[in-house]
Image (cartoon, rainbow, N blue to C red; front, side):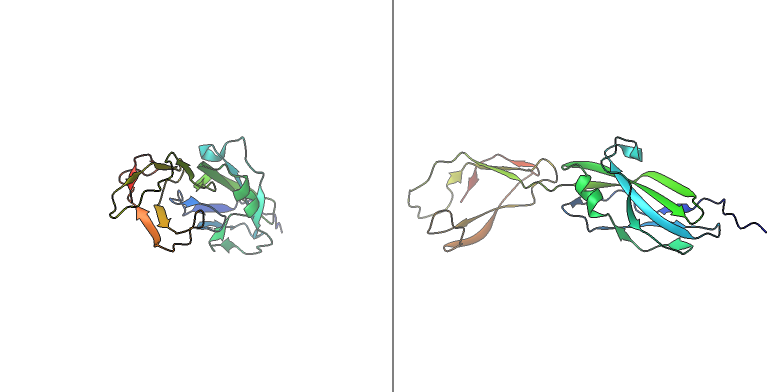
Length: 193
């Protein structure tokens, strides 16, 4: 009677590319695992690279996501370990390779199973506007303050009006959106208040 498991575990990729820019490791991913060889799933791991297909150089080594599974399937969605997300490059697409091992020591690898776009850098802001001490009875004065985010882009640019400098206490006018027009990564046109 031979109980040796020679069957490789199976990876089922239901994920595809993650369409959202991520600031933290918390998003759930849908890659499932199964083992039909009799020794059950042991664990699965992930690593990251900037190359499609998962070819190196690696940004992180393999890191355990789930251990001691001891079941023939694993279908729960799961998050990237913080160590893998933190090792990913900011402002670009990173590729996640998945490896699953069963109790018999068999392994399956899916290189570049899905991509993650990471953006943990705030937008930059440049003010080329001199102070404006002129009292204004009506709006419409143009100001030169630029905003840029070369990775995930600008979602919005806002200003508020206060009676005290550098407070942003919204004492006169609460936070108000500046129309971005067609600009998504860079707003360089002067805008009116």
